[in-house]
Each structure stands twice: as structure tokens, then as C-alpha cells.
Amino acid sequence: MREEDLDESSQRTISPLEDSTITPRYIKQQSNCHESLLSLFGLLLSPVGMCAPCSNYRPYVIVKEGYSAIHIRFGKVYRIVNAGLYFINRVTDEVHVVNMKLQSIDINDQTTMTKDNIALDISSTIYWKVFDLLTVKFCITDVKEALIKYSMSTISNTIAKGSFKTFMESKESIIREMQADISAMAITWGITIDSMVINNVKCSEEVKQTLFLTTKEQKIGESRITAAKVEVETAKLIKEASELRNRGTINEMIINI
Image (cartoon, rainbow, N blue to C red; front, side):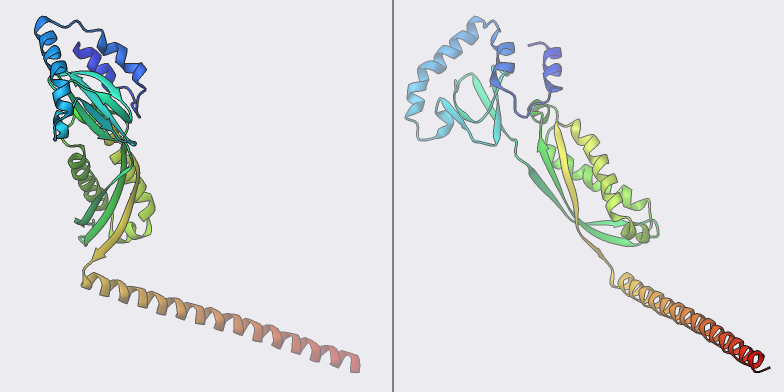
């Protein structure tokens, strides 16, 4: 198979593909004498493999529901199969099973610094799903490890841009920004990001005490402002009542005259 054919197939969305859409591209390959002999040898060993106690030697593979598999023959992609039972030649074939279900990755207690030098321990969960089997299997060594490292880097860089107050007040928009950044990179790896959740945000006791005092002072200030407003409104009402009383007295004097 030519390299351009593999590149073209790796760019195609697979979630998962029907067998008929990909199998004909790969079965039209001409086998040489050596490949034919190996295939024949594998077929002859198939009855023996049926009785083998280890499943690694049996001439079939079971793909469970929620998974898809890449069938490789002589080191080349032969077909992509969905859930089911498939015959394989143990001498010439390999099968790589890929989980197509929604998966999650937990990032626990990642220490980050805000712009105003406040240390935060952030725990988050990322939900992701494979959509391109070929890219996940052949274009990246470990997609989970890559996703964890890139997500940790994105979280640190995003939080470092703003202050602690900005993070607490705009947490939802910051999470959406981080998810969009991670999703843009994840698509090139053959996966999609379903959602991202910040489970917990921890800070030092000193920061907690400072926040408590700040909140307390804010509440005291707000209560004083409210009391002042009440006093002003009360003074206005007293003044209006006094004016009305004076008008009433003047009217009585006019009537008596």
C-alpha cells in the first residue's frame, strides 16, 4: 500500500467504519510467493490453534461491543472491523483492538500559579472519545499520556494569565477556553473532547484566611452602606412629613382669617 493511501485513510473519520467501505481498498493486493507460503502455513496450523489452551494461538478474534479493531496483514492495514467474531491467520495477521466508548482521564492535585502568585491545587476530569482508529494507533505513541500532559500544560498556562479573583469569578468561561484549546489539539490525534470538569480547587490556609477577612470586611462595608441609605431615606421622609404639617398649619390659618 502506498504512503499516500495510508495518509488519506488516516484523515478519514472512523466511528467506526463499515467493513464494506474500507476492505476493498486493501484486499486487492498481489501476494508474492513468500507471503503465499506463510498464509498457507498459517491455515494449516489453524486446526491445531483451535485446540490450544491459550487464546493467542486460536485462529479467530472476538471484538466486543463498543470496540473496533484494525486487522493488519503482513504489516499492512487490511481492514477495520466492528464488534463480532473474525477469522485471522495467526502467522501473517495482527489485530489491534481500540476502545470506541467514552473514556475519562483524571488529573489530580495539579499545582498552578495565578498571575498574582497564589498557588492553587486543581483536580479536573476530561472526557474523550476515539473517532479515528488509524491516527490513534499509528500516528501517536500513547494518546492518553499525550492528552494528560497537554491538558496539564494548558491548565497551567491559562490560569497563569489571570488573577485568583478573575479565576473564581469567571471559572466557567475559563474552563470553556481550556476545553477549546485541548480539543483543537486532540482532533489531530484522532480523538474528540466531550467535556472538561474542574472537580476541586484548593489553596493555602493563608489565602483562605485572607479571603475570609476580605469577605467579612466587604459584608461590614455593605451593611454600613445599607444603614446610611436607610438613614438618608428616613431623613427625607421626616422632612416631607414636616413640610406637609407646615402646609396644613398655614391652610388652617388662612381659613380662620
